[in-house]
Length: 170
Length: 170
DNA sequence: TAACATTGGTTTCAATTGTAACCACCGCCG
DNA sequence: CGGCGGTGGTTACAATTGAAACCAATGTTA
Image 1 (cartoon, chains in turn cyan, brown, orange, yellow):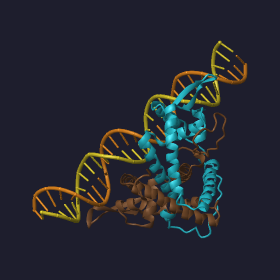
Image 2 (tube, chains in turn yellow, purple, brown, green):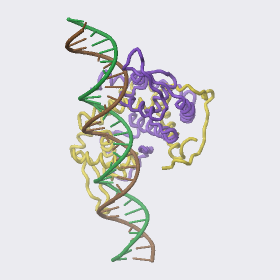
Image 3 (tube, protein in one colour):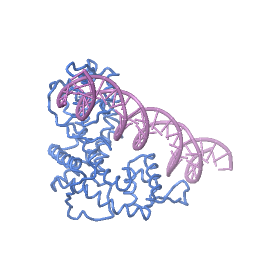
Image 4 (spheres, rainbow over the protein chains, first blue to last red):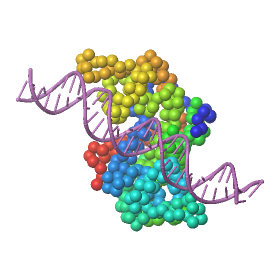
């Protein structure tokens, strides 16, 4: 892992320097984590209970629904989940007959994945469910706020990504 | 080391966008989750490596630094973590001599927790570190955006909380 | 004050998740 | 061909996490 090589580059906020007082309840990373967990858990519970799906499994279905015929490796790329998580999700989806797996004759290591008939039915039912949650969530925001949030997440995301790529702040 | 989440840049080589339409890349719950994981993992790695602290353990310290003398139950309230997580964090912190535990004579079930000498030293070193990360993150946002984000998170949070309290959407 | 419900906190056990080792296959180079 | 490194994917094992059972002290009710 790219651990010990850091590109120290820090921009201190004016007046943020104070010591000894960390308002956890105002600390952005913490708030993001709480928010994200609440949201994910609620939704996962909604469809997990109905269709016996874990979050990673549902993510795989979501991607396959949009882009059929991917391989596990391509799923890794698209979902940012790791190999093993994908492998497990795939095998549980196979067990449920939500997806099908076929060999790529050109490369016998590769397995082409697709939603099955049943998988499509489930997909078609979950998508609106998921969207309903999202709408409900978003409905608490004004139109401008939605746009703002969109841009903000984008920016935060690339910042955080930079940490991972260039190494941590010193 | 946790999963390294990469920004899912969809680029289609196989398959075509199909029925239903769930852009996982634009799906708010998903984006929140990726963002939050990236941020938390980066920070956790930064102080975990240096001080042998897990995220829950650091949270406990953060709270105790601000509100000394709490009991485990009060920590549960403050952090929204569950009993067990707190219990484990506390015992690992005791092992590291980062906190002290003393009986409340008024109620012998209750244990009063405080940062130790050593704990305070660590605390004083981590707080600025954590704040640096937060500042660095936030520095990618304009001043208006920061205020917007603040309000937006508040709203989303209470929406998501409502799910948990009143039950899920139908 | 005996019984019972509640609260603070820990332990136990099972499920989830991450890391690393692994097998099977491909592609390349000699 | 015959190795050999790299890739797709799975397995094995260890660490984390959560749910529920548990112990001990307190409060409550009769």
